[in-house]
Image (spheres, rainbow, N blue to C red):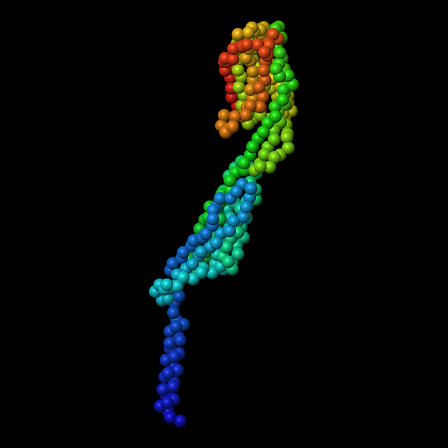
Length: 279
């Protein structure tokens, strides 16, 4: 056998082995990361819904500290998620690198807020990004029925102290769903007293049972009127001032014995007091 040919073959084999060894010794690193995501909105409806976050997590490849134009997807095994508000439920799908975020109906008047924490944990890179989450407060509407047993209430000429029972019921509508009518307090309402003469006082008291009240009237002198004079004395229960729509739930009239509903009276008035109802 020709020893020169054997030597050349041996040298060629060594050279190929050297090249392969050089390739195997390349140091791969990832000096840059681009951590972005796509989501149509981070605001959830008050009726509850599910949304999808698509992750666009990539890293730039470098060989022997020389950056290349190659961007690789960040391995799903290095990604973890958590939520700062348990109301927002999350599920990570590694193959698609998507996250499902869902929340049930909000039946309170408070906005739900939270953050979705997405963490990348690799040997040379560790970072957490926070995705803000928000759910609108429920749309809550209160309707009231306030019924007085005697309206108008006729005050005798002899004046005195009187009590008129009345009840308050409320229907609560949450996100368009109407509830049952229930006896209720009046703490979301406001009162207004109007009279044209200081001939007494009127205020409301509770009967000790939710939704059951009484007007407490004190007429301190005989209450009589003639046509052309101001007969007004009434107590109004209505919505609070900040409500978009003014609703008057009860206008309790107090009239003297000689009041003529068809009479010609002056409609001017004097404010006797107003404010929020505390009971």
